[in-house]
Image 1 (tube, rainbow, N blue to C red):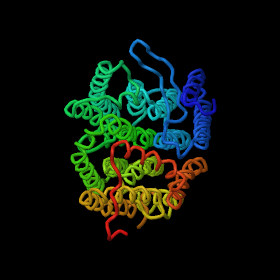
Image 2: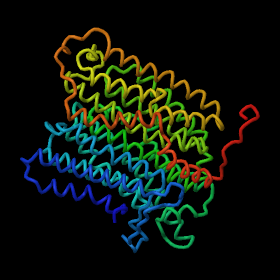
Image 3: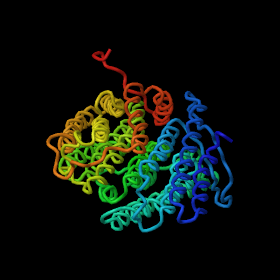
Image 4: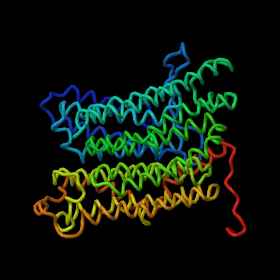
Length: 503
């Protein structure tokens, strides 16, 4: 039972029920129950990771229960190294978000209790979407995740929160409908080739024409490209990140957007290998555009939250490029990048949120001289920025290096152009760091308070993970590498042999 994915998914739901039964006036108790629940889930995930067999490329902790037998739909879950890493990221970030955003729910349209119910329900869905091995189950969770996020943005955000929430919902629903059409197509084809099923492994064995595979691939890929987000389907993200609370933004960019890139590996490559090869040149071009475009827009941002959002568009370009480089290094780098980006973004949004709440402004120019006034907060933001910059010694450096090396061995031109994004990253990080942390103290910042004990406890594990994985990424890579190599082998690829000059 300790290694049950179903139990892991059930724990946050149980916590949300407990919170729902509490009196509305017991706000602190609701927060405490949510924090304890997420800590238990994080501990259970870590225990599962300890028992995970690293060299086994098959799905582990598999569970399968009949759900809607008439249509061959099962509640089926299981994880490989890629899914384990992303579930671990999600469950570790959840208690950090709860603790860091202790007062985020105040001032929302609904009660504090509702806020934490939404967070806990979302955590269940985050686990389920990475663990699902039934395509219909995946689709249901993929779409259901929109509901708590919609209410978290629209009910507890700031500024144009309703418009941002609706825009997020419309984009996501559009992509979901395209994916549903492809799922129905797969279901019909499975019936014609032996029996109706939504089982991922069985669907991956279907025979289909190249034209059919291309159309079905696009249904999945567009949905994932919107979620990721990849240029030019990214425009919902800056508005959502700008309006959401910092904690919601962490879950949105740190976890939910990874569903898109994870889906590209788990569903696009697995179900449609030939179509994936056909569309690889186009996807690599979109990835490179995302890297450069996101970086250029980030450089020109004056608003802190929108800056972080545009940096993420650039980062997701790197992740997508690594996935479709079709090398084991690119795959491993992309998955590690997903994990590392989750914590780098968490650090940026959480510390940035504390800066904004203290200053009452999200304009970067208003934060001058914070290093003198709030040194702990300033140095936390600096380290988060250096991680986003992929500075050597920070976790993002290893993943970005693997993506670029893995891409260069097969697509050197794309890798070289993408490297230009690293130069731009230095600008979009160092310029705001200089404006916000250094120089003379801007008027109005003289009496700002530094991080309190709760905030220090919340940000400490994030910074520790960023630094630790920067120097020693081996524990994660030992889990990721076998699964990545397996994906590439299933696609029929082998890593390019080194040239004489590389020997």
